[in-house]
Length: 234
Image (cartoon, rainbow, N blue to C red; front, top):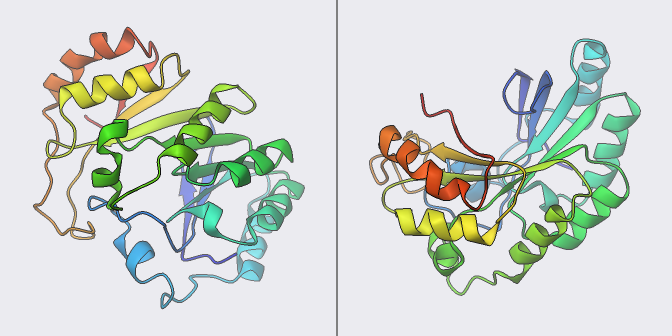
């Protein structure tokens, strides 16, 4: 288990909890709008931000102050030692949140069934017919993502779906297609794109939706996912 970054406090990443966020290197996607390009492209050469011993020493000092630990990436399920890592976090009394792109349903299922994850946030990148384009992987096999969606919808663990939306990759019909795909999901967050120098395709390539237009679309989306909300748009 490698740690490429550590955010020592977040009040936003883990719903209802104060948490630290651990960033893992490496990803099987090449989403051109990714904000963590260094974790994707230079993962093998990137030095670890902290060692596991340093991280757990930090967590030991935060017992009673933090409620949980978020594990994000990159794609955390690429990490071979994630089971042991989550177990050690849970043994210290912290709740765990896993961010995933849904590509590894067997590993996701194993972690949930082992009671190592308290909350899952899964990215649903786009409508099925635009997935390969959106994740930057020609010929992308959507079946694992479908399996992960179906597993989470069975309700074994609290979860949310989330979609980062931008003009160039998401038309209104695409968002409606996502809503139909994940119909009945208990939580779906639309995150309006925010440009940055660290974006994989470079700044200026993508643009956010107008917030008022996104809000106007919500009633149609809520016919399929009543709990859909905008996150971080204002």
